[in-house]
Image (cartoon, rainbow, N blue to C red; front, side, top):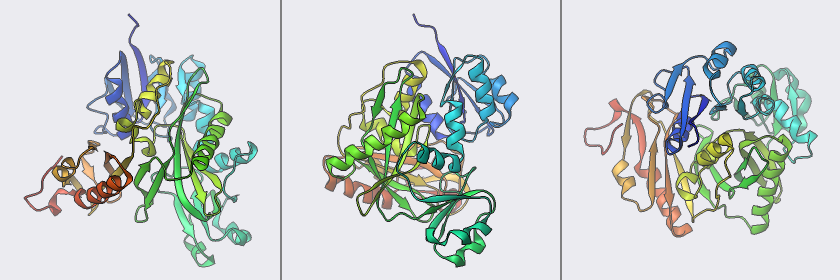
Length: 387
């Protein structure tokens, strides 16, 4: 019998929770490090340790006895990962890949160096430099480091917006004339094998700059679908390291495909794969960690993922309309086990599988209307579900 191997996972949020839910089917042990003692992984991890993900000694000590080291968030110590790799650990993503991707400026320059189509941009050290690049306006300003879930990104539509711009190093990126925003999940094994999922269409909630919902497969022509997959594979091939990558793309109104950003981990745009594909993004990641063959990415049929985002302020979690969601055929709610909700915080998602695009559209509308995550004090007494 194969011995139980240990995975040291840095980050205990919902991505880690969903990874563990899949990993529990196999002879592996998943230990988790997170600064929050009540993180979503705390109740599921084989061993849960509270600690600073950016403290080198803490991370190295936590993972010293593990076979594999992984992440579920980019904001971890790259130096610690480099040390662990030097100790002979399998580190996914590779520290060099993470170092590049953590810095949006380095990431953009990486695309240019490798001939990967991306948006026009410049790197700036301070907002005072923006006025020198008037040709890029309207633009988005992105902090080079520290942004997540829509944070650290702001539109600059004219010179009038410069006065409120972020301070510090950033990427000034010309706004693309976007027709559709897409994402392609790509998996690369330790042996160099590649598996690619169908591109998904992403619809964003302008209130929070987060994905409101996504649908798969995308409603593009076969040629554009193939082009999106090829471009995503080009990105992963350039990084030349095992892992799972979420490659976010723009399809412009002129039909051009451009790389927006890449995440070297499981991603919100791949959550539907848990029910919609034979091998989910979390199953694939485990296969990469263990050196196992990659799984089947075939999409079973039309699918959507609707994010459940906190509304109405802060407080203990109450979910409104869960029974209504469960009454819709082909629905799969996922609640992330977060104790507190706040406006704009990802609290869960609902996946729906349907027979047709018409049925999928109807289910998306009903779920969006029916299901809300609100703080407990704002809810009447007769709501259908709480967590």
